[in-house]
Structure formats: C-alpha cells, structure tokens
Amino acid sequence: MKVYYSRISTQDQNDIRQLQDLNGFDFVFSDKCSGSIEFFARPKGSQVQELIEQKKLTHLEIHSIDRLGRNTIDVLKVWQQLTEMGIKVVCRNPNITNFKSDGSQDEVSQMIISILSIMANFERQMILQRQKEGIEIAKHQGLYRGRKVGTQETKETFFTKTRNQKILSYLDKGYKYSEISKIVKCSFSTINKVSNIRQEFDTIEK
Image (cartoon, rainbow, N blue to C red; front, top):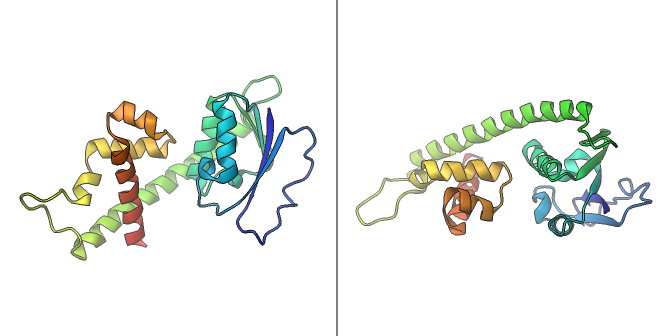
C-alpha cells in the first residue's frame, strides 16, 4: 500500500505545493498541526502507524524530509524505524529514498542519512548540556533542597538514576513504552515521569 503524507502548521496555510503528482497512491494524508508534535502522535501520522501495525504499508512518500519530525533526531528516528520494518520511504526534496527498486539500500541516501546522524548526535549532546544547565539553575534557585527523612526523592535524584537514564536513551531511540517497560522492567508511569522531568529541565534552562 502506497501512502503520501504532507503537513502544514496552521489551517491558514496552503499545502497545495506539497500535494502534486499523487497518481497511484492508495491514501493521501495531510496533517494541519505543529511540527513540534511527534510524527506518529499527529492525527494523520497515527493513521500511518495503524497501517504499519496492520502490515499494510509498503511505501511512504513525503515532499521534504522535515515532514517526518520536529528536528534531526526525530526525523532520523522515524526514518530508521520505517527502514527496519522494510517500508520504502521516498523524499522528494531532497530526492532520497532508503531502498532502491531492487530492494537494496540506496548508498547515496545512506550517506546523507549518515551526515544527518552526525548532526543528530551533536543535537543530542546540546540537549544533554541544556539538561545539566537546567539542573544547576534549579539548584541555585532553591528548587532542589535535598531529601529529608520521610520525603520523596528529588526530581534531580530520580532523573539521574542509571535505570532512568536508560529509559531516556530508549525514548530517544524511538522505542515504545511497552518495549521499554519490558526491557528496563518498569511501569509506564515511570517512563512518563522520566519524559516529563526532562521537558521540565529543558524549560527551566530556557
């Protein structure tokens, strides 16, 4: 099954530029939402995920690679997930695809993705640095005063635990909550707490 996917940020924008040459597609999905929303959490992105889970999707086409995510890390995560599942991804701008017509991986596209991976790693390091700075700022602002007898552990202590750093790593790699729960042996609420605290630290730094 072939699907074409487009996204624009607001209802006022026009996505006609993206919606060209659509003959031969089984579905054309067009999201009108912020790019900050993860691909599979978007209204139409979730429909793409349903087709994947039903093992119906074989080909996903997009106008530009940034339609897959809000940043390089998110784009790579989705690209790699689809590649691992054997789903052909075709990007029109730049013109790249993960698989050739014979089923082998496209070398030029792999090179471009490798460059993006380096950029994503740099992006990830910057995120980690912001997290550390956010924690330090929170300390100086008196938001973390240490743990007293009978009180709950601080967010800082919880966040920096080895298990929770593993959870964070799996989240960044695109693992689902159900997968992380089995691997790390933790509850969904713990995974959600790790995710929320990271966002809080990022917000404090900003």
